[in-house]
Amino acid sequence: MRGGPLNPETVRLLNIMAEIRRKRRGTDKLPFARILEKVMKERGLSVGAIAEMAGVSRSVVQSWTANANPHDLQAVAKLAKALNIGFKELLLGEPESRDFENLTLSDLFSEQELFEGICRIKIERLVPKKGSGK
Image (cartoon, rainbow, N blue to C red; front, side, top):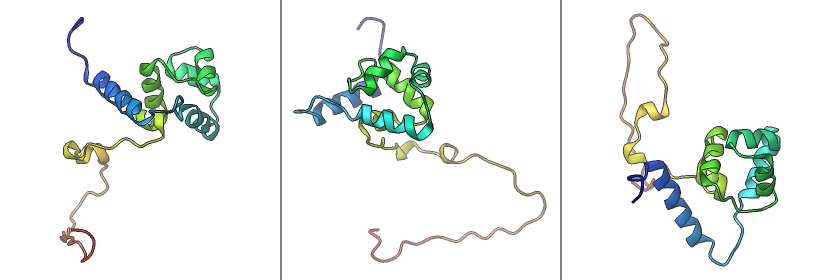
């Protein structure tokens, strides 16, 4: 392979695109234009602002909103990151599944010092209720 192995982000994007191809057999268009326009309207973003976030020209963004399938997936990934939306969610409208196996508390929470002094902490074990599936 020319240039060495692919970085994990590129592999992830390629896997998502393979999934997209499998799912959209028989259709030509992705829901990307509809999703992008919705996000732009909700956040009050212009074509120029989206173009700047994605690192593409205004005409590329205009073609995206006119229902053209995006060819530059790195630009879509950059836009998704700038909008704080998952790549798959922006492109397909499907939330990305999280890797809960490798999820840590620091991925979910930031620490803040709330109290200095003496305190008592009580820890209780939570037991699943009957019929909750576990």
